[in-house]
Length: 266
Image 1 (tube, rainbow, N blue to C red):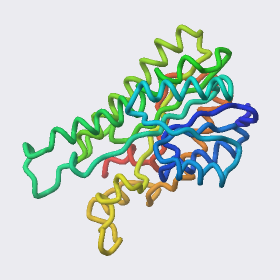
Image 2 (image 1 turned 30 degrees about the vertical axis):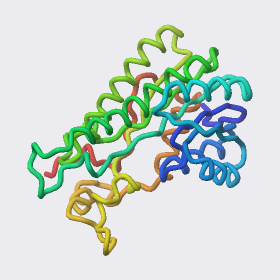
Image 3 (image 1 turned 45 degrees about the vertical axis):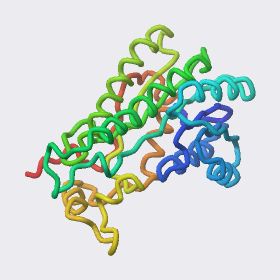
Image 4 (image 1 turned 120 degrees about the vertical axis):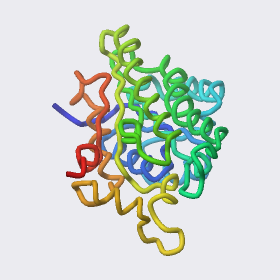
């Protein structure tokens, strides 16, 4: 079974972040034609100039009407979508409990923003904006979750709740939409463990020294691989879910965490 994506049309949202850029390179390297969607045209242009094999559109994924407009334009110009990678998401410092805060000091406005960012902007909007334009003969939709969805990690309650909701939405979409297409449309999620990004760097590394925080050290101690993930570690999982190699895989959450979720400390 092949992981080859030659000629496949892949739409990627959130492709200019630390993880997203690497996934875009992986898709292009496997032969896909990439349509990249994001808010920063300069970043989009720079990435497309680097990797080739695609084009870019500016849109705000939090604005469904704006995203639906761009989705229609992409389909009209570049044809049906074979792969949809929805990689928008992240956490916010204001939505994170710190040791000096009481439980009820949590900023609920920021909590709600994180829920909106990861569930609605990160998954629901992309599926409903681009879904009508996927290839009716077969398409793969991939959302991006987190081990926070599976384990009740301290301090990041909003992020974990949002990713848990995203996984439920992913499975529901696989059943409801996938079932109505007799499995021609597959919907799965990739669930990264701990990868240092701009959204979580403040939790894992010291801003002044760059050394690991106590939280960062605990994570490494509880990861059998003994390190944080590299962005390249996600590429194989995404290519698998995007390709015909996973043609009978639907409604699955594929964990890429170096063993973090399997380690119980004894």
